[in-house]
Length: 318
Image 1 (cartoon, rainbow, N blue to C red):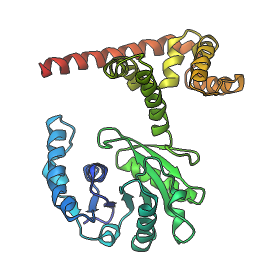
Image 2 (cartoon, rainbow, N blue to C red; image 1 turned 90 degrees about the vertical axis):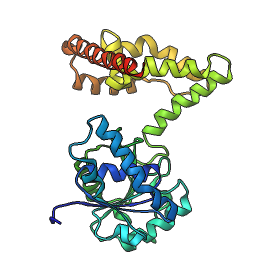
Image 3 (cartoon, rainbow, N blue to C red; image 1 turned 60 degrees about the horizontal axis):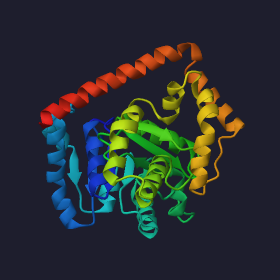
């Protein structure tokens, strides 16, 4: 094997562990996958083959499915998965004590240069890695979108004790694997992804509870309304482009209404003038107002591409 081939160890062969195996193998890495459940290990090759077949069907592979699958090795111990790894990805259930035990084992088993990353959805690394872990400076959270071989964003969440060089190396490794790392500046439960998702879900549950809308109607508004826009531009750029004058104009016109809606739910998170100024400065640095009209045209054309694709998919479904 060429010395520059990267190696990933994955602990946990559930849906996320399988998905990470595909991410790394598709990027040319050698992967060792372990799960303590013998039945899970036995099921993993067929699941990998099935997902690769789907990716091949949609022309999302650059080489044969068989070639990619051959890079994934099922192993029978955590130590075997971690041996020689550049990156160890823990994909165990969201339980503090379980992750604490796993990271203690991984720190002993993995080579000193390896990054130890948890796919935790809500728990921060400081919740399950303590001073008894000698190599805790290389430990952090790397929370993916699900599945990461289709949704490339991955949140990199260092703990206060994580070394800066370890964070930088983790970002470089995930980028090399074809993912899009976003560094979370400090620990917070749920990170960015699940805090945004949680805000939408909390309101969706309230709308159902209060008899405002049905579940299907809420899904329709998201699927056919907010989601297409947000797949092209995120929430800040969306409102920046929705109002002539940009996000400062939007905040002036719409901010009080959003504040009242928040107050209905017992929230007090006003968009202060200082906060709006900070967001506005970032948006104007990214898009000067003299380029606003051109960016709106770009957005609309991207939505047209998306609409054409969705129409074609609907016809295929028929």
